Length: 192
Picture 1 (spheres, rainbow, N blue to C red):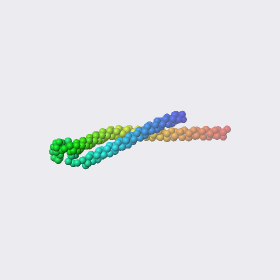
Picture 2: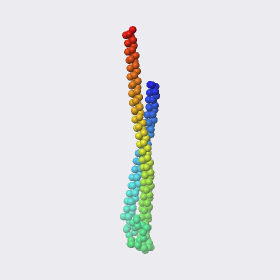
Picture 3: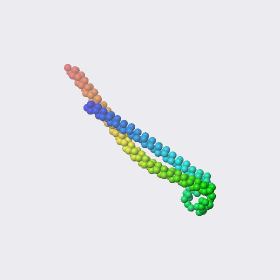
Picture 4: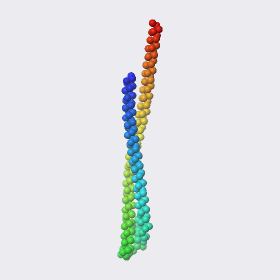
């Protein structure tokens, strides 16, 4: 009976070690998930600052150029009928044409930067969503393992308590047998 109890106790210790290893592995996964989440937050903040700086640069381009030679960012591709700019570039003269072309180039560059930043923002949002979905599924998986581990620990604690009670019962039973044997010996000695 005691050997069976010792075997069971050894089994429980082995099972407990396995559960502790799984817990450590899950904790490592949780730490990895937290690091990925921190990196995502940093990247999103970085892209927001890039977008804001692109908007500021675009605003500076609008304010630094002469309004009569510069078209706003949204109007670069519109006709110049009511803008006060001469119909032909040849009517502007060489200085006016160079100002016009420089302003047009800056406007196109600003639009290009804005489009690139918007595309980058969309790509980051998609990657963030995908990573967040991955992280949530990982968290759910970890929670499931956590509940399994907790249930395993509870069962082990109950089994350990039962084993302790059985051990105490066996020890009490042995003591009772020993005392009964001693009592019988004393009675036998008195009878003789």
